[in-house]
Amino acid sequence: MKNTVTTFQQAKEKGEKLSMLTAYDYSTAKLVDRAGINGILVGDSLGNVILGYEDTLSVTVEDMIHHGAAVARGAKNALVVIDMPFLSYQTSVYDAVTNAGRLMKEGRAQAVKLEGGEEVCPQIKAITDAGIPVMAHLGLTPQSINAFGGFKVQGKSEQAAKKLLSDAKKVEEAGAFAITLECVPAKLAKLVTETVGIPTIGIGAGNACDGQILVYQDLLGVFTDFTPKFVKRFANVGEVMTEAFRQYDKEVKEQSFPAKEHEYTIADEVLERLCGSIIE
Image: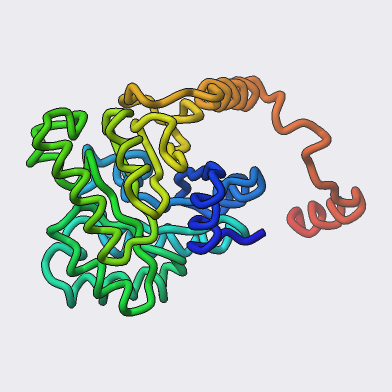
């Protein structure tokens, strides 16, 4: 069954958990979709895991459109959400709606995600008024990494927890259909989940959220530059890939690959005539 913002809301109301993963290309999106994952986020995390940046700040709208469209072509049942990158929505409400529209039209998104609470509520309202579903993102918001002074758990003090809870209510009122909670204490995430009427999707926010999301390269051990505490490695695919690459390198150099079964044939008489014409 096709996942939509409506089925996400229905899952919350029924107490059914939602699964999400990132994807950035057609082939991976097909695999994630085949596994029955409810939603795919084309995250600006592609800056780290695909493009090799130190952070997400250098990712452009064009990057998101390019990768988002590829994912949308591969995902038939998962809800495809595309991140709005840094400065694509913070500058003005007009820019926010325009760029969200591009992600929908050119990137083939079914929803967009943006970071921030009360300060981006005007953008959330305008985007949703334009008929574009918005997923909010609270807690550790990587686009604000310089303001936070690093990757740190958010909402630990009374004041910070109160603001996060207030922001959750306000983004819901502004029209967000779901909220990503990143690096938030589990008990606080549970309180937020019980307070708002829309689904919460946790990443480092405990299991009381309505759903969970992980970067698939973290889950598979493909990206190893750093591993957050909240990541569980479900398979060590990175090692499997490395070993396959080593074996390929070995067989190429010892000339055991390609073998006869990998070759195409040509009739001997054709080759003989060809050789004869060269000699003449």
